[in-house]
Every structure is written in structure tokens, then in C-alpha cells.
Image 1 (cartoon, rainbow, N blue to C red):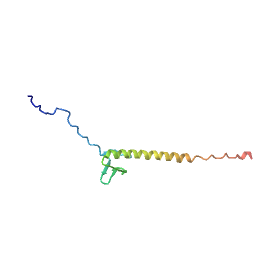
Image 2 (image 1 turned 135 degrees about the vertical axis):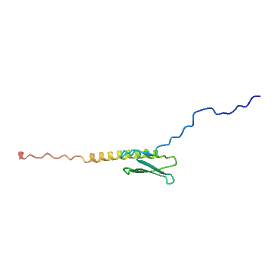
Image 3 (image 1 turned 90 degrees about the vertical axis):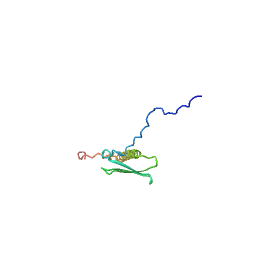
Image 4 (image 1 turned 135 degrees about the horizontal axis):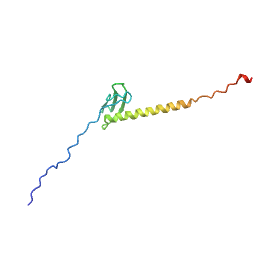
Length: 111
């Protein structure tokens, strides 16, 4: 009869440590490092992003999977969208107010 084999753990790779994501970010408007903080209120379903230097604010809805980096990314996207919208509004207002052609003046010598 044979012996029972001993169950042993084979030496393998160590368990991967979960690297925590950032919770303080660089502000898009004042460019200060780690001045933007994100507070998640999962119970209320709202996230608030605030810059401590220039007091820029952003608010968004959250769910149970949302992380602070997600809110920061949404803020970047919203700022880009607002900037593009502002540029298109400026183009439309400047193009609609075209210069009115001035009629040629009549010289007094011809009279």
C-alpha cells in the first residue's frame, strides 16, 4: 500500500498588495499639486470636489463603485466640455455680427 501524499503549499508568488489610489489631485485652474480633495457621501449619493487654493468646486452623483479618481476624471471632462461650448458660442456670436459694408462716400469734387 502506498503512503498518503502530504499536501504542501508550493512556493509561489507573494500575494499582491493593493496599492491605494490618490485622493488629492492637481487643480485644473490654479495648477497647485494636491490641492483638490474629493469627499464621497455614498449614503446621500453625492461626491464633492473642492480645491483648497482657488475654491473651485464640482459635484457629482456616485454609486457604490465610484472612487475619488472617477470624480476627478468627470471634473476634467466637464471642464473640457464647458470650454468647447464656450468656444463655439464665441464663434457663433462673432460670425453673426459681421461688419456692415460702408457705402462709398461721394467726393465733393464731382459736384
